[in-house]
Length: 606
Ligand code: HEC
Image (cartoon, rainbow, N blue to C red; front, side, top):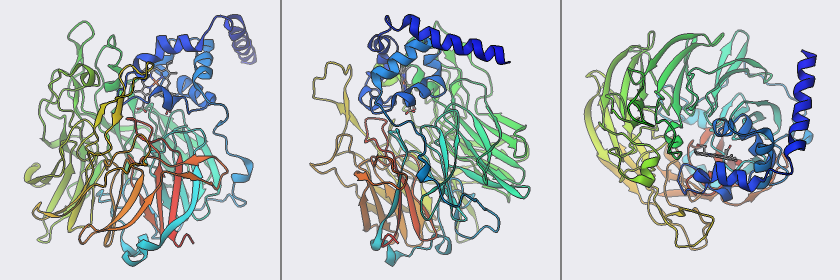
C-alpha cells in the first residue's frame, strides 16, 4: 500500500515538471473548454464567470466535480495549466479557525416545532410554514433586517436551500462543502466535503439515538452523514449513468428515502460529437440505514438504442424535484422533464403516481406530449420540443369539501389542478406566464390551502450589441421581460390577484432581469418570492401588495470572514423558522448575477 502511494506521488510531482514548459493554459482552454464556455449558451457559465473562481476550485471541478467527464481527457499538467490560466488566487474554501463555534455540539433530539426540514415543512410540498413554526407575523414583515451573512468561499453561485432545525442550520454549496451552522449566530459546527456541488436541500431523519442528514450532489452521489458530527455514514450513486445529477431534495417515509434523479446530459450536446442521449430519469427508494436499494422506477421503460451516427434514444424525463407524499393512498407523486432525443415517450413532462411500497406506476398524466429538446436546439433551433420540463414538485392540497387536489406548475407557464382519485384528470388549468426554456413556473409554488402562489420566470436572453471578440455568441439577459407573481384560488383556478414584475432600474448590474424563477414560500398572510434582479420580496397574501423588499445585490461583512456578495435569486426559495428568514443569494448561470452569500433576516436584525 505504502509503495503504491509513493509511486503515485512521485509521478504527480514529475509529470508537471516534464511538461510544464509546453503546456499553455490558454491553448487548453481554446481546445477543450471554449466550445461550451464561449458559446453564450444559457446553461453554461461564461468564461468571465469561471474566471471569478479560484484555481483550487476550478481544479476541484475538473478532478471531482461537474467537469470530471470533460477533464477525463486531460493530463494533470493540462488541468493545472487551464485552472491557473482561468482562476483567481485565494478562496480555497477552507473555513478559518475563528469561524467555528466555541461550542460545537449538535443536538437534534426533542425536535422543537420550529423546523424547516428538506424541501418543504409539509411532505405534501406546500412550502407553507404555519405561524407557530414561522415565528413571524404579517405586521412584523416591514421590520425585517439583516441579522447575519455567511460567505461561501470562492463560489459564484449559492443554490442550496438551507434546512433549519433545533437551532442548527445545514446547507450545501457549489464547492461541495456541506456546513452545519448555529442558526442564531452563523458560527460553524462542522463541515463535510462532498465529491461534487451540493444543490439539493438537506433532509434530516432520526437514526437510532442520533440523526442522519441525507442529500445528493450534482455529479450523482447521494450521502448519509451523521448530523451530530458530520461523519460520513454511507454514500452511493443511485444511478450509474455518468451525467447523473441530483438536484431535488430527497423525501423520507418510515425507513425509506426516495431520491429524485436528473441529469445534465441535455447540455452535453454542446459537443456535436456527443452520442445524445442515453440518460433516463428515475426515482430510487433506498433503505435509510445502509443505502441499499428497495426499488427503482425509470420514467422511460426501455433503454436507449443507437439511432444515428451520434444519435441515441429515447432519453430524458429527468426528475428534478422532490416527490410528494400521499400516505392516505400509499402514493408518491413525481413530476418529470422533457425527452432529450427521439423518440418521445409517454412519461415525459408528466405528473405520475407511484406506489410507495413498490415504485409501481399507478397512473400518469402527460401535459405536454412530444417534447423532445436538448441544448443544441438553442443554437440549431430545429427541435420539436418546447422544453417544458416540470422543475417543481406537485403540491397535495385539500379542498373545503374534503376532496384532494394535486397542483402542478410547468415551464409552459400553466398551473394545473389534477384529481388524484381520477388518475390525474385535469380539474382546471390556468396560464400564469408565457413559458419557454427558462420560462413559466421553474422551481416551485407555495400553497396556504386557500390559494396557490405561482411565480413566473419567463427569463429572456437577447443577442448582445457589444462586440467582444472572445465571446462567440454573446447573449444578455433582457432587463425588462419576465417575472410576476400570481395567486390562484385552489378550488377554481381563478386568479385572486397578480403582482406585476418590477423592471430592472438603470443602475442595475448586468445580468439583471425581473424574472422570478426561485421557489415561492408562504407563511400566514405573507408570500416570499425572489427574483433574478436579486430582490427578495414579501407580498401580502390578501392582495399581492409588496410589504417588504430587500435588494441582496451588495457586498457583505460575513460572520465567517469570507468576502461575499449577493446576486440573482434562483432555484431554492426562502426558509422561515423561529422568527428568522433565510435565503441564499447568487446565481452565475444563464448570464445572471453571481453571488455567494447566505443571508439571515429577523425583526430589527435581533
Ligand atoms: C460540453 C460542454 C463543456 C465543456 C467542453 C466544458 N464545460 Fe465547463 N461547464 C459546462 C456546463 C454545462 C457547466 C455548468 C454545469 C452546471 O452547473 O449546470 C460548466 C461549469 C463549469 C465550471 C463551474 C462549476 C461550478 O462548480 O460552478 C467550471 C469551473 C468549468 N465548467 C470549467 C471548465 C473547464 C476548465 C473546461 C475545459 C477544460 C470546461 N469547463 C469545459 C459545460 C462545459
